[in-house]
Length: 233
Image (cartoon, rainbow, N blue to C red; front, side, top):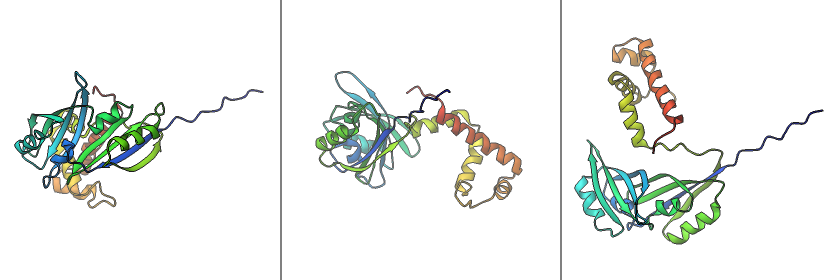
């Protein structure tokens, strides 16, 4: 009589979310400007204990961002690129940055953004680390921070930022695919319940329903591939 080995449950990650209100953190201070939003796209270690954080900032002129950031001793700002409604900045920061603090203790920052002078940080803590110790250390070192959520999840979120999605999609999709997908989104095709049918949307775009669905299916498949393929971050 054979016996089966018990199937072990996968170890879970702990996802934590904090809010921050201290404008001394540059990404929080910048977002005190009306309509401004700052979102971290990538963080990389540099020399002498410093880190490079790449933020996408929208809703404010780039010169105004540089002006505010330069008043913070903890950040060295550099404008890297400008687009129609947003800009990409590099901030050279030290270990007192909240995201860096989490990184150096084994947590994986997933979302770091701020609006209206209020910052949010979510991070995933692997099972090899003590989630309770990391949370306590973070709150002790950042007195203005509040723990907003703490929960277990069975897998880690793929490392793929919003900016990378936009860049890769712009490179891989045809102009027509982007046009059809944008029209579908703006018309409410992806709302639930749908605000427009495929037939009605195809009529508006002056194409057949089958052609419309082919375009949308291609875009959707691209999103699925991007979600699962490894990245070079």
